Length: 291
Image (spheres, helix red, strand yellow):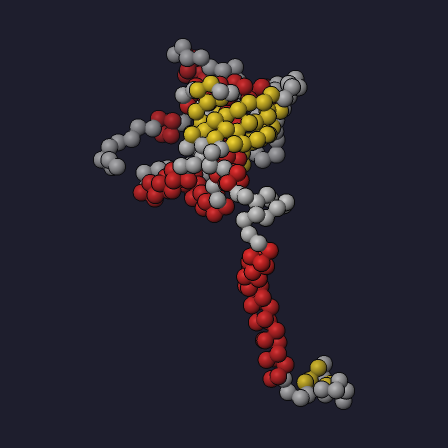
C-alpha cells in the first residue's frame, strides 16, 4: 500500500539463536519462560504454538513438560463437564447463560477446556515457500467454539450453503496465511462468509471430556430440521409416494443415459464387425467354428 516506506524487520534481518534471544530478554528485565531456551513459545488469545527439537522432524512427539496450557491434563481424569455456548449470527455471545464480550468469552472457555487437554495437537503443513513445517499447538477455546459453530451451521444452512462456505473458507484461510489479506478477492470471500452467518443463531450444548469436545445437542429458531414436516427415516410428510417415485426416476436419469449409451455403442460395434474375425491366428466364423 505504501511501497516507498522502509520496513524494519530485525527478527528477519538480524536473526538470533533461541538462546541469544532468551539472554537478550533476560538482560532487559523481561520474563522468560523456563523452557524459553529450549522451545519457541508463542502465546496468544486464540491459543499457543510451540516449536522445538521435536518439531524439527516429523516423527517425535512433544515432551509433556513443553506443553503450556494442557500440561499434565491427562495425568488426572476429570469427570465430564457439560456447557452451553450461544451464538448470534455466527458470533459467540454467551457461555453457560452468561453474556460475555468476545475476548472474555474466549479466555473463559480456554480456562474451562484446557484442563481436559482439548485443542492439543501437532500440525504438519506447508509454509508459503512450499517447505513442510511442523509445530505443536494448544487451542482449547478455538476447538470448542469451532466444533459448536460447525454443528449449528449444519442445523441452519442448506447442504449447498455448507459446501460453498467450506470451499470459500479454505481459499480465504490460505490467502490470509500467505499474506494476501489486502487482496480484493478477500473482500469478496468475506461478503459470502458474512452472508452465510445471517441465520447461524442458537445454542449448542457441548460435553467436555479428556481430549474431546462432544456436541450433545443444538437448537435454533432457524432450524431446518424443525421446519420439516417429515421425520428423517420415519415418515415422509412433505411428499406422496407418487412424488417419491417420480423423483427417484428423475434422479436416475444420468445413470440410465450412461448405461443406454454403453449398450448402443456395443450394438453398433457388433453390427459393424465382419462375418469372420481373426483371433489368435485362427479365423472364427459367426457360428463359433475355427479353421
